[in-house]
Amino acid sequence: MGGVSREDTETRRARVWLAAVAEPGDPRLGAFVLAHGPIPAVTRIHEGAPPFDDRASWLDRARTVDVDAILGQHAEAGGRVIMPGDGEWPTQLDDLGPTAPMILWVRGSVDLRLAAVRSVSVVGARAATTYGTHVASTISSELAEREWAVVSGGAYGIDAAAHRGSLAVGGITIAVLACGVDVAYPRGNESLLERIAADGALVSELPPQSHPTRSRFLVRNRVIAALSRGTVVVEAALRSGALSTARQARDLGRFVMGVPGPVTSPASAGVHQLLRSPETIVVTDAIEVADCCGLLGDDAAPWRSARVRERDELGAPLSQVLEAMPARGTITTSRLIHDCGLDEATVLTAIGQLDLRGFVEAADGQWRLSRR
Image (cartoon, rainbow, N blue to C red):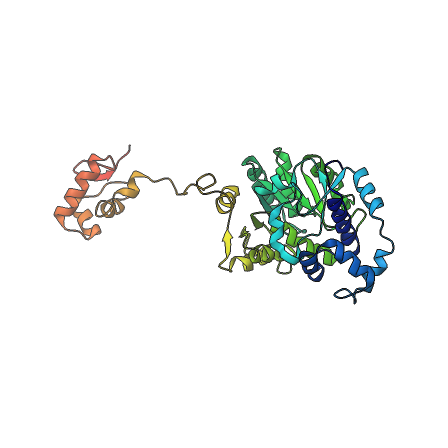
């Protein structure tokens, strides 16, 4: 570790030890570390002193923690450890305050800080529908083509579709895991996780060989929310964990976006509930996502409208006279005046202008729609 001071080394080791002993996101530990530093926190836990005198489980874990073994195991797996103050540390994680990660375990080829600067989280249901996976994959691939990194959780369903969509076009994707970065979970995504490690980054707060639990998934979601500029929820039921990511993003002042689904689909019921909140933005594609999260001018979405036809710009009374023309056959001027409900002079002026513009034509002393 050439060029690294002894103080930095000891601080890093203390953070590794704390990450192995405590659960991620513990606010009491985080507040103490922010106030006093990680090394005093290690001492207090060893002594069973306040504010950690009620954390007997931490002391039990502490008896088996071997920092050198953990770091060696992580290095053998091709990983690295980054902490606050490192050049690769994404400083937006500091917005989490006392629940910010103690340290991050990373496997991957990209610089995490640089990749996360321009990133969007795409999350949603594990039990995703064909519609949901298609939308997540398409939005993610189009974001990647616009040089946005895609962040998700490495799970089945929407997460996997988001990662694959980015990788399919050579984009950068980051998977934030609720287990060690050397643990293939879920097992069915093992090959996908290896691809992410090769071309993007696997990230976790948990040391090697750590296994996921329900609480770790929920706590992990705050990192997904904090790491990116905004969170897109593609599909989520009313009790989906993806909604907790959206709430975390909202509380952090990040953009919260939702993709509407079929109103009859339970898989989209949570998204639709989310969209009823005024702080949630409706998005339907990557252009609209980038418009929310990107730079004014560089990422602004063009205003969309249907093609304007010449007929749309006629105005009254020309449009009123044209609407009175029969779809087939001809009509007399007197009948046209009757059907329009306009006076003779107005109808004659309008029919003359419509003739000049090619909308109608004379036929045997009557009028019909132009065959042109």
